Length: 154
Image 1 (cartoon, rainbow, N blue to C red):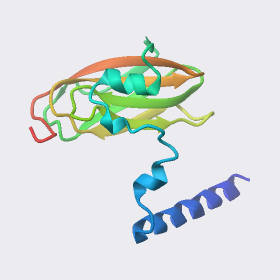
Image 2 (image 1 turned 90 degrees about the vertical axis):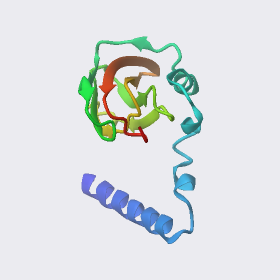
Image 3 (image 1 turned 30 degrees about the vertical axis):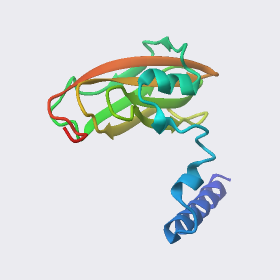
């Protein structure tokens, strides 16, 4: 049964990719169903959290952010986020001092490991905030990264 699911998913992804690259529909139209709100309009971490409904997120030591303390070049800063909170379904990364702080959103499967890695641009020294959704509650953790050369035009 898993093989059939994989094949079906691959066919749907290929067809969607073909339609998007042909110009018949725009990527924003394809992604509209998965993102109810335009988080790119948020200009602060607080605004992102408010839009998510996570204003009351509790700080948790069960969320680990692995990142360099000092990033020599803000153009490519590796960040890993792991949640040990049972029932984690979503991880959101926010780079506080960027022009658009909302950096990434990851959906975690029911039996998946709640761990993600990515590389972000950072304009200047900033906090990276990980917001985790588990069992319809929000949790968060912060890590400060000192950027010596900005990646967003700095």
